[in-house]
Length: 377
Length: 202
Image (tube, rainbow over all chains, first blue to last red; front, side, top):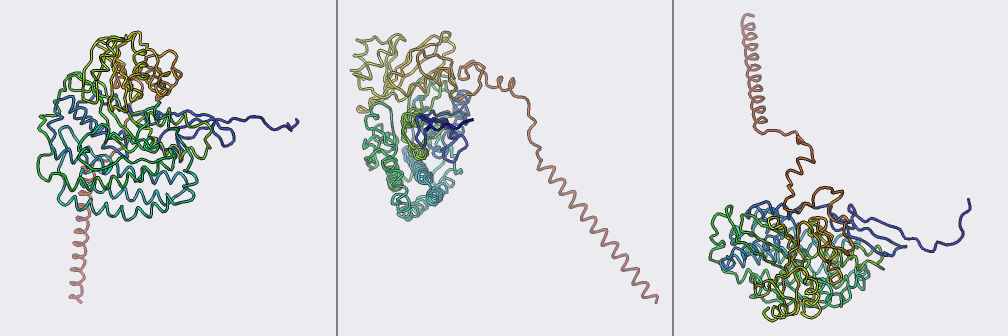
């Protein structure tokens, strides 16, 4: 047998990254075709975490749906609770009966949830580039926020706190002071995090100019969240489609230029400061007295009039939406989740892969904040 | 909303329309006008984004409802464009040429509802399910419990320990130890009594 002396002209190799791989953000897999270190194309594969949430909800009465929806997103379950409550309240015609204090508490919970998730994702972005300490610190900071959730709701991860008509219980005595202490603790450590992540030569080298999304794609595809704000486009559901008490709060939409991994990380980092500020504003301005739950009757026997709606909220990953159809019975007829990852993690990611270095795959997925459960629900 | 509804009415004819919220409206149209209307809305109406795309199974009417949620990001308004197709001949025109991300939705609806979108690139390619041979599972007549009972055997579950039994065993053991202790103490006392009598006799 003779060994060919000519160099190979083309050698495309097919690789599976995931579903069990430290560089994959969740239970999903990327099937990629590489030539050397360069990815030629790729396909997103999901289904490893399909729990049929949408089907389960169609078989449960209205009150039984809360323990299901919060599990759609582990780091940010409260967005799901709020959206379900908001959609059903709208279809039931009781949106205007939700007490003012409950609206403020819901906003507080949403911002605490955003803060906890942002802390985790900024650390996770750095972790994917080999910076080991920062994610540990960020997860520790997130744990302080989870302590607050535990005190407020009884649960650290899944809260089931926002319910139809309002929230389940009032803020405990002294909660505002303890929340302020946690915010101060986080703020004290953020300069250190900035130093380790955003000033790091490794992070800057691997994030700047990598994973750039052309600005014209923003017009072609429904990109949302930090992905679009890192293009310099101030698009935020909290401003564009105001809900809860956000119109009463003072904040600007965070934007950055560059549309690369660094710009998206920086948007999230600045949104941590924004969430801290918003939590302080809410705690300072929310009504101290008043009901927290509207009179809704026996929720186990609820029957909601036939209708169809779409509600949305700003999660850390972008626009999270629920499309809900009711038919006048005691169950939801159709429950369909619109997670930002459905667009960012499949069509956008696949479109960005050609020409990408294989080692930049995880940083890119991290910066798009791909979350498989909201793709496969 | 009024302006766009009038425009759609004159160009395509709509069956009905309503305003759900100031930022959300719905127009119901016939299936044959769907793609033409969506294209017009994208090119001329300002509704450039496909925010969401959904299916509702109206089994009692033997129809599927397709809902396209289009958003005008500049006006911050979303339009739900609804149409119905025959459930028995579940086939609809693909919109992937208008919005590439529709490929994923159409792949999912093909798998979960059995609706086909001729020309859509990933029809028949597995999305969430693997080796699925039964009825599309999101159809209303798919019975999850019946499927599970038919497909998966009964599993007795883990060996479990009843706390009541543990407590009873613990109490019985404590009782036995106490009795044993008492018996030992009695025996010792009896031995001590005998030895003291023997010493006295000496």
